[in-house]
Image (cartoon, rainbow, N blue to C red; front, side, top):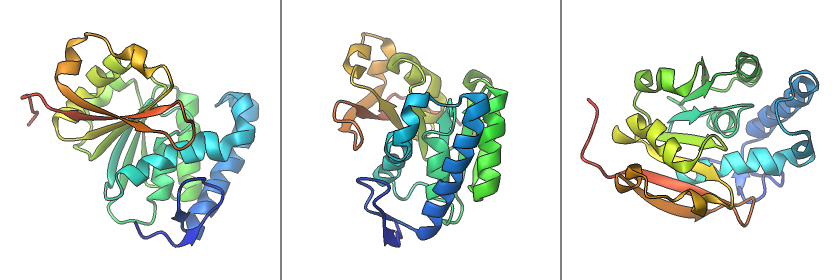
Amino acid sequence: MNWEVKSNRLPGITSVSRETIVRLEIYENLLHRWQKIKNLVAPSTLPGLWTRHFTDSAQLVTLAPQARKWVDLGSGAGFPGLVIAILLADFQNTEIHLVESDHRKCAFLREVARETGAPALVHNARVEAVIDDLPIVDIVTARALIGLPSLLELSSPLLKNGALGLFLKGQDVASELTDAPIFSRVKLEFLPSLTEPSAKIVKAEWNGNEALV
């Protein structure tokens, strides 16, 4: 990626553009403002916002630096999808789809996207209602949405069409590895997280024979 300056605000992310830092600062200010009314994130996580939420989200871009089309399932307050949209805002043909069922959170996502110029398209709907209508993308993401078997099933229409899954998971992800049939259809790799030693990034690729046209 064409990063421009080093940043100490995103630990482990080597460098980002000055414009990106400004956009993230706008995001930070809006989150604090809306948090007073909407309770978008756990209040205890706000002091560590740049590491706990921003860096945690941004690390996914380093795993797929050429990807320009992403879908984030259950975006909530925008992690990781909206952070990714901000990091990729200066690249051509970037398209980040944020799927969120809570209309209040969607209003927040749209406000941040508008104020930062992030290339984010917000879908105010349950994932199940729109997953088959989403475009073919490079990457599908989610953080703290549902258990891994259900998450793989939910995202399977995108995985079958060639999307790579990058799912932020906590330290208990091993307990989610069951005998569910979906695990025979995907190839999984567990990568270390930059922000939490015990957390994992689950990299998922479809290895079944099914493909959507």
